Amino acid sequence: MILDGKALSEKRLEILKERIEESGLHPHLATVLVGQDPGSQLYVRMKHRACERVGIGSVGIELPETATTQEVLSAVNRLNNDSEISGILVQLPLPAQVDTEQVISAVLPEKDVDGFHPLNIGKLYTGHPGFVPCTPQGVMTILSEYGIETAGKRAVVMGRSVDVGRPMAALLLNADATVTICHSRTRDLATVTREADILISAIGKPRFVTTEMVKEGAVVIDVGTNRDENGKLCGDVDFDAVKERASAITPVPGGVGPMTIATLMENTFAAARARSCGPVL
Ligand SMILES: Nc1nc(=O)c2c([nH]1)NC[C@@H]1CN(c3ccc(C(=O)N[C@@H](CCC(=O)O)C(=O)O)cc3)C=[N+]21
Image (cartoon, rainbow, N blue to C red; front, side, top):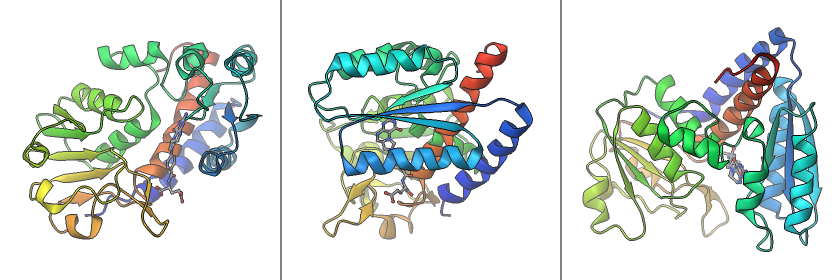
């Protein structure tokens, strides 16, 4: 079975659009983009387009490649203090001279729709409600919408990044899976990954995950967004081969990526609701 993240994201955006309309609220998302990286510009444009679709207002702050930490911080502070703004997303990566940790920590936790603020990370790890990073939350939505059980299952997460691998493992643990995290120093990787009922790859290496690394009938979720030798978008998983062995698999494009953006929209609406009527998460 192909897990169609694109179709699922369309469905959820439609539902969200109606719920926003009914709410009478006017959620707004602010994005902060530093520099001119074409990839980052594209992602930010996609986020603004999604806002438009569902009836979320959007504001795009752009700062030059040479911006200092102080300049980024003052942009974030202005957005924190702007009562029109429900959610703030600082597009990552930031240029090297900017202190990313300091910038992320400056975003008000209740506007942190990316779920990257240390308070929200702490809440996720302790199993308390808060904003959850959009990509791993999007993966959980795919699993639940397709009726894929996690309780008692062996889940193996490949990759330990702060924005995907680590929160992915925390969410699976909160959903009662038995979770293993693998990384570049893991020994005998294939032996570990072959244990997985649910295998999640978030490593950023084109077609790294081959059939020998996958148990027959496993659910395979590909979070990779890589460019191959021909500049074509591809995942971490050798899709054509692995799809024959997996019971379910996400494609790239059209899998996890669109769900990331749909989740960002859902988080922004949740932020607006929380502001208007107390905590809703
Ligand atoms: N603060 C912050 N928050 C993020 O959520 C964030 C970020 N920074 N930096 C970059 C990564 C990457 N990311 C993606 C979003 C959508 C697709 C997506 O929709 N991909 C489409 C294809 C898009 C294309 O054609 O390139 C797909 O997989 O079908 C992919 C990747 C969010 N990120």
